[in-house]
Amino acid sequence: MQKNKAIIVFLIKFFATYFILFGAYSFYLNKTQQRTDVFVCSPVTTSIAYHVRNTARMLGYEAEIEQHTEELSIKFILNGNYVSRIIEGCNSVSIIILFLSFIIAFSGNFINTLLFGLFGSVLIYIVNILRIIALSILYYKYPEYQTILHDLLFPSIIYGLTFVLWVTWVKFFSNLNKSKNG
Image (cartoon, rainbow, N blue to C red; front, side):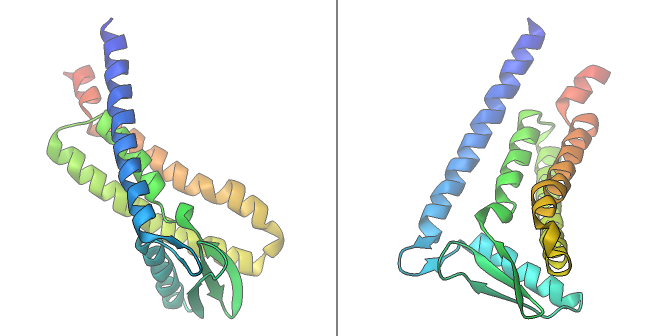
């Protein structure tokens, strides 16, 4: 019965956190995105695009971004070629929400949960920027592999990182680990 209670508590905490964060994010998107005559992406998606552009420039590429005029996306232009688009799903917020929901559901003490949540969120954000740059460079150099790169290889990077962070959290910081060892 104790194991069932732990599973139920985990599920309640996970889904409550997920729906609260997802609801707040959806509200934010509804208030910040525009889909009328002029398309305007949310500030967080625009921020990702600027970070991608600036990082690509630091790596020696000629990189530009511009708001797409026909959809909610930002064009990423590499060496004069429109190679990819950055959409809301590319900004890492959804994966950060999933990550935070999991660590809160398997919470540790407040400080560890807060610090690991912040560290993991920042790490996911940074790796996502590098992932978008790498994907765009590979699109530029090997356009024939776009489907496999986008659909298989590059999601595995961001989801793989999230999984490693979850395992690290459960193994070293969550209360679940302390109850087994204590």
